[in-house]
Image (cartoon, rainbow, N blue to C red):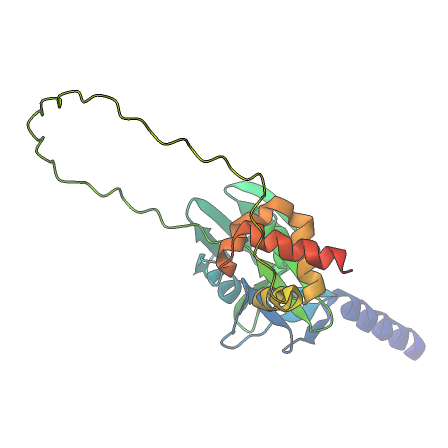
Length: 247
């Protein structure tokens, strides 16, 4: 009888262990949004069953979202412009603008903070999501929508009185136009392109190799980010081309 009770107790303990999520403290995990590190007030990112969960409020507020919490429904709502994401705690189902989607791990409350795996939620937006295992860093790159400004109304202007056409003057002979020499102007030399590539990469929270791979993968989709670097698109791609040839 005692052996049966012991065996039943061990089986119950084993079942409870399997059912409970494994939470690993990941206080050293960083979250970088558009080159800026997100500093969380209390609860830090954690690893739950091999999935990185980040605080919904701090992460999405850094991306320009408004975050609200419904305690009765246990739901966190993330809204920006015309887009709305609704997360339900302990569920892998979330809605984006009313359509149902699936998370790869359930959203959940940890120490009073809504935590979620962020990849599935970002698939609906034009964001790049990366993971740097060397520095335990979640990298998020994207743009926040520009705030629409109402058109500025100009006061009505008085029309000037109609002018009489000037008397026609005899045509004057124009000097002959100078023909181009046929030689293209010299391009401005690149000043230490390797250094420029490293600086750009650090702004995005990446290594030079990671940034080069990201830029070549995105191609002309990078044009929306180039203006933040303070250079022209031509100059940017010349640096990338130099980096490609030197590899």
